[in-house]
Image 1 (cartoon, one colour):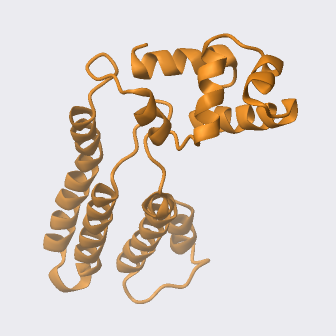
Image 2 (cartoon, helix red, strand yellow):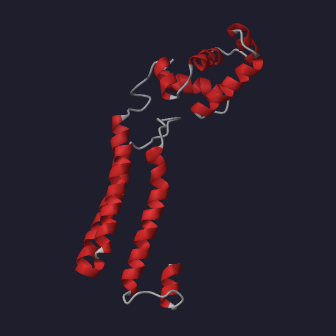
Image 3 (cartoon, helix red, strand yellow):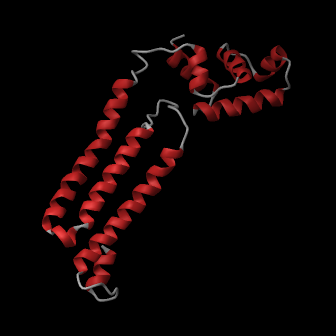
Length: 189
């Protein structure tokens, strides 16, 4: 809106066709915003964590391809006129429908906790838990204190605290109770 206002007030000089210039600016902004938002998701290697649903990279790539196609069709405004505008508007709505569609596909592909419980080793793989961290989780779930865990596993109290902090970070919990509840929820134990 600011760019349009500045163009119409004569603060920004445009080529002969200001409408085309505004469309090109909008295309550029659209591509920049989508790139800034989706490229980090494409380069991320994270799995599903804490119940959050992440879209597969193939869906993100398809979404970005749709954005590029409707942006390209709108960029041909000066050749095909209103036809390219209509096509790009249809594509815009079609691409925006893809996001909820992808979420629906993911929900159906990944059953909820009521439908599917996992074993503890799968839980550890899902949250990238190391063998030692897994031992500490099991001890936390039995209600042991950090001191009792350090004595049982023959490690220092600070090492237990460090592992516990990393476990909380990986699983997205903030307390022993939340961790125990998460393990129980995911594994059904």
